[in-house]
Image (cartoon, rainbow, N blue to C red; front, side, top):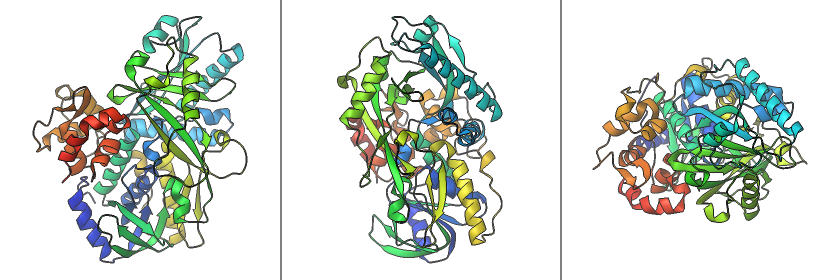
Length: 509
């Protein structure tokens, strides 16, 4: 079954009313992050009736606070976890070549060979990169998609990362990993592809009193509540899983990133990858990103206590990131260069003692005493595999009539082979638009009814007015925050956000 991919206010109203009418559905998914939308897509393409509810907005939680990397699992090899490393490489390849080639590209990672890096550390990184090449081959990802690693000379290193420390620089090691244009855009693309296959996707709808076969839903806008019956209820709320099922035990870990104007890094083309002093397997990355920014991350800190809606970076984390990156730079960066920051909580499975950096990134499916199936742990790169795993379990334990998983070869909205694609020469379109929307980019302009659709929303910001409108008419944005903080990432920099806030409000009914 193929329906429109457009998520908007009108569709939400009619689908919410239909759900309230009381027919039993096959699958109810709680949580609109990458795991939840992945489950909704998997269920819909197996021929199951599915509804997804999200208390806030798509990608409101951890799914918008990642490093925007589609990791090949290299760090898991170093800890001897070959299974998750291989799976990560396979899933990366599926995303880059089949599901979302328009949203994921190869990111060069440059490790500068500076005097502070001893021979053993250099050998370890080189070995890791070679092992990464092996993983890529094992996963069947061609070198045309992800080039093989190599050593480069000093002048090439400076070309790729202009502010790298020159004193004693002996070239660099270069490897490639997958990089998302934006994690929240991936969530939106998966959600819309699920809708294309008949899934009901409802934001601003809270779930409570969940059991294995029923949930109370409350429309956060009208305040009205009703009960829904389902053959299986799946909790995919990530770090908030314990609020839906109190039997779930998680150990959240905070990962913080700082945002810079790319000019302070000399507009790099490679991600500067700096070993954390005294650590064998941890790095800090300065990654070139959309909108002329660089994101510097990443920390791994225990985050006990109540789970905040929006986690905050700490002063210690900011200092750690700046101190680490400055060991490899010619120009010292200070807190004054930071134009934005964000933190996300990883939903790690509580394994007791030890550092969060050492806790496994494996996922687990648990059935609560009430019958709710919760998927916990895991990582963004493996969202598709996690969805397949939990649906296989649901089909088996609930005796659902469903076909096998179809998502491995399924192009998302915006991928060239998705039926919604409108291919036209990208030369006619802004490169930034094609980077964010892929083959759907012409539709964004064609569907616009606003004044001056191709005009930037503000000077120096490469987002056009038609994108703001499309967020509302096709991508389920219901508020100005949805547009600024999740459909686009303008909101990461407060000064930019202030400049375009009124423009965003124009497009909200």
